[in-house]
Image (tube, rainbow over all chains, first blue to last red; front, side, top):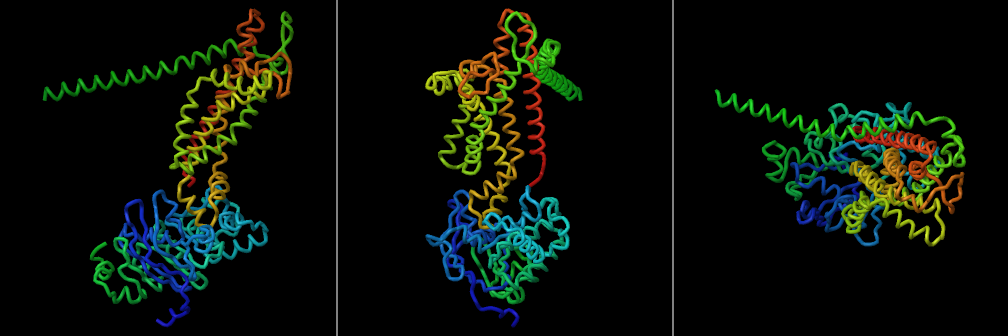
Length: 259
Length: 286
């Protein structure tokens, strides 16, 4: 597939990445490289550590009591876990969308989108409005909310809320966007809308998405990783993984024999 | 068949007996409250008039006069207490909810539980020793300090509970935007809970406003209008106490009126706060 050769630049790389919850090792020795402006899916059975792995990539895993991480994650060549790196800066550059839509309940639609920028000290209204409009457009929500930007973010439907959360993550303009099963709580129509917008934002961002839905991974991703029990069994072009997997386990999983 | 029948009969009798006991104990709790309300209402409402709210006490022997100075004094001292207790209390609540696993947090939790069990008269003595003795005068300030100590555990506990109701994924969402933790706490978690926090503060105020013991030898009381923080100040509970034990019929009637006003004030604050608190807990805003 030639269209995948848009960029050979590696933007994010995991090296021997391991993650623990106390004594329990959830992620075991992951090595992988992600290219700029690609969509990368992570599939695998429940409890295989894919969400935990994803949460290591923006250092949100360590927010959980007793959680720890070993190994390296290189963002444009720099290890985000090395000493002297400010975790706040890391998260500004690696955004995240969560499984459950979680707009901030007390904030309007507009404020939800721009709160990241506002709390970083950008208060000029014209700039905030501009960012809000462009991000809501990228998240394919602008047409639906442009007349009610001051109503509460939580007044929207689930699918709209999730797109609002995507707009919120895009507003701080991170080169990498992590998505943790962003459509698992949504109906097929809302899911389709989000898949559509992912193809759009791929032009500017690198997306790493955890999904339970193999069809979704096959539809939208350029690369796919398959996880079992905290290990990455296989990583490669999605077209290869879904048609011609190298590993027996991968084949069994995608053909529905286990998982 | 017969065995089954007997078994059912016994069970039904047990059921009814137990229900009866439960209803009875509920009534035992409820009746004194209703009697107090009814009694204070009967005695107080009849002694109440406009001058009670607008006039100062008259000299002994002269009829009439009111408790304006005590109503304003209670407001003054309670607000003073709020001013001291709210910043400290809410900060402690944030600490308990956001850093609940730390050692200090666990110690603080036990301390707060113990604090809410301290007799209010002891708190009064403490404020006397800490404020009245060094300043060599009974004062509104000492009263405010005493009431703030009464409010503290309530404010700490309610704000902790309220902040713990905020689901963790909202904190993570804030952190994932590259915001420092303190900004997430203050501008997202706390800002979203302000109405709820206010409710907790009202609960604390309604508790403190009715306290007499801690004010007896701190704010002390007087018979004139004063807004001087360094001087004694009248409060409703102390004024009621003074009037109630006096030998003058007119003063005793005013004590009833004061008790009625105080009770209505506190009950309505309490009901108001509880109503909103229960709505918050039911609401699925998150």
